[in-house]
Image (cartoon, rainbow, N blue to C red; front, side, top):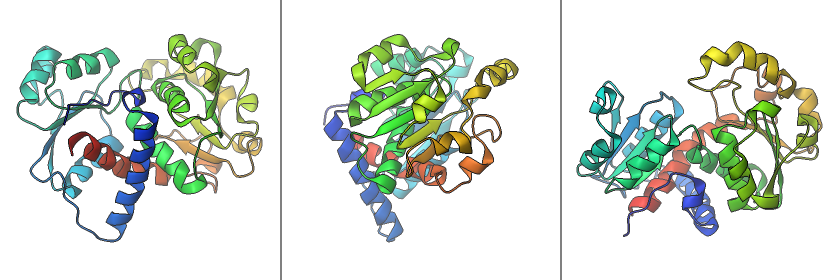
Length: 300
């Protein structure tokens, strides 16, 4: 099988992505039924973390364990990357010893360099430009709760960040309409937005974005590495808080998602994230199942 990487949602075809979501739902049911399925027995995943995470580490480690394989956690303190070894050299060495590599880092360009020099599949577990693994979980969660997202309307509220970019890609790949409401100085990358054509567009306010929307999504206002901007961002983003009043303007059966961790009282109120429209806990769990489907696709 030819080596393939998963750095953005655009690395798979729409048909492959839909098949992956369907497979994730099957794998989830197999686990619930107590069925043992170990297609990756004796396979090893190297997890390269330059940015910390709860959900990413646990979901990938558990995925490999349930599939009969092994995962190795590598922080900057555990590798020569933290002492200045070139990304290219680390990729060449690691890929001679393991079967697949997951990288969670700051610059997307670093993930691309890693993949270009790896002899095994590389999975982007988050960069400053994209978070495709989270979108797999989000699309699985929407399907489980509301069916096919094709033709639906999604509202992105808040920062035009890596999650926003991956939602733009998802609009193209899963064929839904994406409305994006961000402060003027925090809009998504214009080239990424332009590539989506009429599938994604900027709107003037959160209220316009959520009007009749079937899914409302947000993220923290200051991502990892932006902590020094927290105070200023809180002021700028305050009108973009997802609260009960904003959710009431969405479709009556709209659901709410957040990739977590959330800052209750900032980007989302407690009444929303803990309310009946929130599916964030299913969304978090589905990181495990969708990533199992991804690992199976790349390695089997």
